[in-house]
Length: 118
Length: 109
Image (cartoon, rainbow over all chains, first blue to last red; front, side):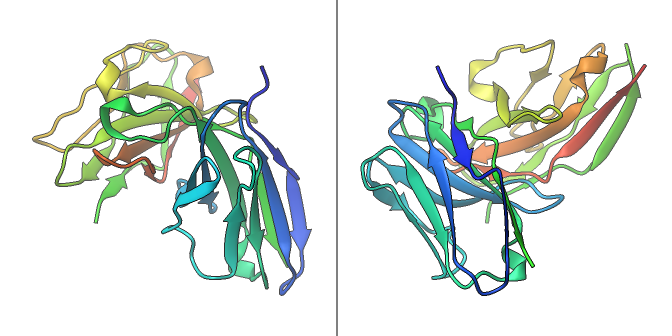
C-alpha cells in the first residue's frame, strides 16, 4: 500500500503570507505526528493527533501555527503570517497507535514539505 | 530536560572497516531508544529500536544505562550504508520522539 504522502513537496512563500501543508497518513493509522526539521538538525516535534483530536500540541512554537485533522485521516498544518525563521522541512508521520514505551508503534514518515519563506 | 546528543556530524570510513555512530542521551526515566536512517533522496525510516534487540542490515545497538549511551555499530561497513543516521528517544509513557542532530555516514570504496 501507499506510504505517508505530503503535499506540496516544495513551497516558496513571502514573509507574512499564509500557508497550508497537507499530510495523508497510511490508511488505518490512528496516530499522526508533525515534526519540523531545520537545516543541520534532527526533527523537532510539533503536534500529535490521536484520531481527530490533538492529543499534544506542546511543540507548536507559537499561535501562528495550527493543525487540524477533521476526519481522523488527512491532516493540514497551517502557518499564519509566515516568518523567515519558519523555513524548514515539515515532516509528517503516522503510526497505528500513539503510545510510547514498550508498546511504541513504529512511526512511518512522509517525504516532507520544504518550506521557504523569502 | 531530555536531550539526545550525536557528537559527530560526519563520519567517514572505508568499506569493510568497522563503524560506530555515537549517541548519548540525558533522561532520568526509562527511555525507549531508536535509530532512524535516511538514505539519499529517501524518507526517514526506522532502522532499529533497543527493545527489540534485533540486528538490522548488520547493525546493532546496545542500550548502556550506566553511560546513557546507545551507540550504533556494524563490524564491516558497506557502501550502501552511506546515509544520515538519527538517534531518537521516546519517554517511557510518551509518544513524541526527541531527536539528535544526526550523523552523516560516508563509506569510501
